[in-house]
Image (cartoon, rainbow, N blue to C red; front, top):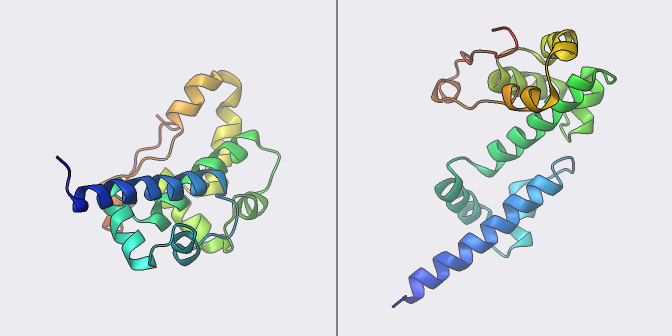
Length: 153
């Protein structure tokens, strides 16, 4: 039999799923923890703690990963500049975007764009999507960007 604490936990998980789905849908919009929390009637602190407990990363980190994934796809197309991609995916600062991109992908966005366009002709799209996903490693959390890049292998 479930107790009140279990039922509240299940309700919180459903709300967290709504928050995550909103970030997946609206990644290019200006989202912050306070507005996400308001949308599900939680405090920002509670949302951050529960989100990290449920998904293993903070809401901000999750959102930035979604933005970088989308940026990677736009950069592979090759028709937008890095600055245009930065703003297209909802980032407000080119410096923050470039730093985060480099941490997650292992190279700056300009290098990624150049390499991706050069390799695009020989890599099937289904393989390109799998091989060029951002990879989060524990070394990134410690400030090291030591993620091997599959495009250079």
